[in-house]
Image (spheres, rainbow, N blue to C red):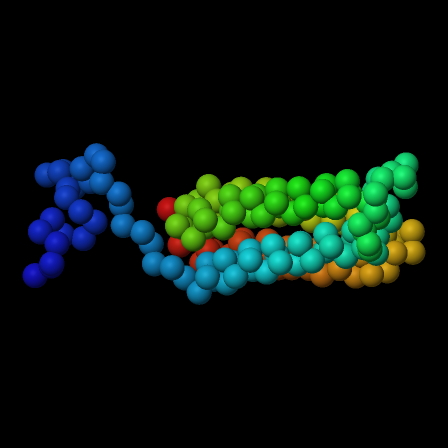
Length: 167
C-alpha cells in the first residue's frame, strides 16, 4: 500500500484529475539537466573572467576618459571599474534568472536560458571579430572560450532528456 492516502501525485477527484491547488509531482532530475546546471555555472564563471580580461587587455571601451582618476590596470579609470562591476552584477543576475528556475525544473527558465544564451553567442561572435581584427589576442581567446561553453550549453539544452525533466 502507498504511504500517500491519495496515491502518487496527491489527491485526485473521482474523474482522475488532480485537485486544484495541488502541485503535480516533479519529473525525475536527469543527468543531462544536472550537466546543464553545471554548464550554467561554468558559463557564469567564464563570462566574469572574460569581462576582467576585456577590461585589462581589451580595447578601451570608454574613449575620452583618459583624464579620469585611473585604477591601476583598468582602462577608463574609476568609472571604467564601476561600469565593469555593474556589468558583472547584471550578468550574475541574468544567470540567476536561468539557474534557479532550471534547478526547480521549470520550463520557463529553460526557455529564458536558450534566449539569453543565443543572444550572448551572437554578441560574443561580434566581439570576437572586433578583437581579432584589432589585434587583441587575449580578449579574443577568452571570448572564444565563452562562445564554446555557451554553444555546448545550447546543445545540451536541446537534448530530449533535458526537456523531459522540466515541468
